Length: 112
Length: 114
Image (cartoon, rainbow over all chains, first blue to last red; front, side, top):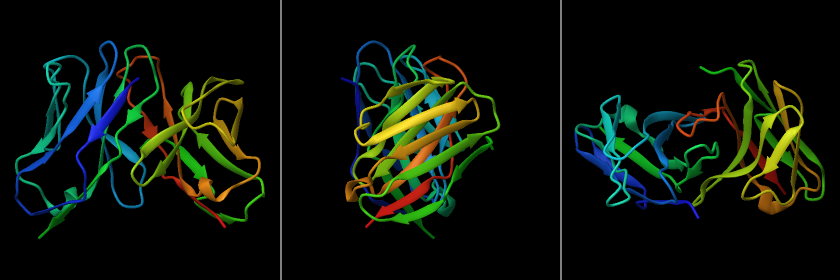
């Protein structure tokens, strides 16, 4: 079946540090890949996505590249801010299907 | 922000009582979903709807039922609440069938079953 595995959290960094949150997936066919972010007290919102191999999604300084050979979609940011503190979810959906499959989430805390 | 309203935002109930959560959208999107969020599990799909009166089960549907009598409303019912159903429940909507289509989420309902 389809599944997503994220690195264990929580992750705590200092402001301006480099961020990587690992995500690997198992899926049949050619899934679309997503990163969603959940700020405290809110619902999830889409951060970025990639729909085919070697695509790079980017938004708000975050990037992730769809790597089919390693079945990965790691999230990176070169210099994090306190406002990036949130829970980050990696997710996939198969082509033609609507149902997202989520990873367990990674809580990120950025200290000033 | 997508027009999604979940009600109630918080609820405390007792084991064995029925509970209904409501999701209301103003976007006229065809697809609606109910997820639950639990530590260590991320979000898991309970039920979803692909049109009025058209619903299907997700991966954790046992103990839950849904109804969609109007495009804008999607109700989640716990017929007889159990402590294992203590969770945060999120409604989501999407417009199309494309696999790359993003979901818009409501702000969630915190349900505690004592």
